[in-house]
Amino acid sequence: MGRVAIVTGGTRGIGAAIAKALKAEGHTVAATYGGNDEAAKAFTDETGIPTYKWDTGDYDACKAGIEKVGSEHGPVEILINNAGITRDAPFHKMTPDQWNQVIGTNLTGVFNMTHNVWNGMRDRGFGRIVTISSINGQKGQFAQANYAAAKAGDIGFTKSLAQEGAKKGITVNVVAPGYINTDMMSTIPDKVMESIVGGIPVGRLGEPEEIARCVSFLCGDDAGFITGSTISANGGQYMT
Ligand code: NDP
Image 1: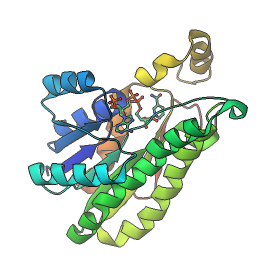
Image 2: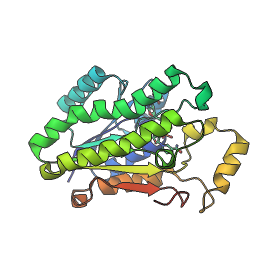
Image 3: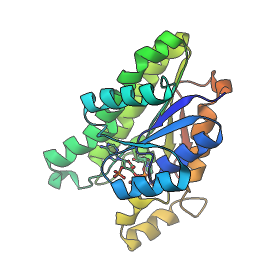
Image 4: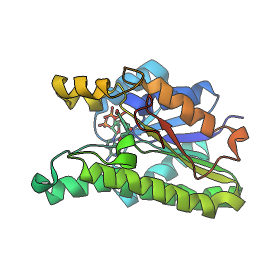
């Protein structure tokens, strides 16, 4: 059954693959982004999926954006919290700004989006919420105290909401990718990348489509018994 879905950060990388996969399942998809208009335009030209620009770290912008999507396409029944950033630094050099930006997008952004779809999902008795966390939220990572804290927070947030949504037909889950071949990885120096790939048992980075398949499975009407779960998709790098 086709439903209305929002994918945050849906214009590039993992989010773009998720948006395409949900569209292929027959859903009506809205992809959001933060500022890269060129990438958003190229994405719409390629896929026909409409894009919307707002900062997920801004509560009022999320509220207005979700209302706009709702008025154009219908009530949001599937929310994919995918937008994320990194601002890496070893802790002794990490600035409050680096901390706040990452928490603001990767954790508060998840609250902002989810809070603005939650009551509608409760009223209608159906919802699918999937948040993209990270292997580094599960195991911690050098120079990513901000990112790991936010991504671990996403998991606790999800387990709590799963309990609150269970009787209302809302499932809330996490997909925790390992290292995936996207722009986010392009800032990693070659030497570091070699050692990362060396630590992945399958011997390669993951592809965005591999994460998208997990997400689209969790969004199906027949995935209603799975809630509060974290699906790790990391090539065997970290087994929970
Ligand atoms: P990309 O950097 O390729 O794309 C990020 C997307 O998020 C873009 O569409 C970007 O918009 C959007 N975005 C960023 N900040 C905001 C914001 N404040 N408001 C709205 N949109 C925003 O990221 P990936 O595809 O690599 O990562 C997607 C998710 O997966 C992230 O949450 C990331 O933490 C997580 N992840 C990624 C891994 C990887 O190896 N790549 C591993 C584990 C987790 P714009 O184009 O305008 O900048």
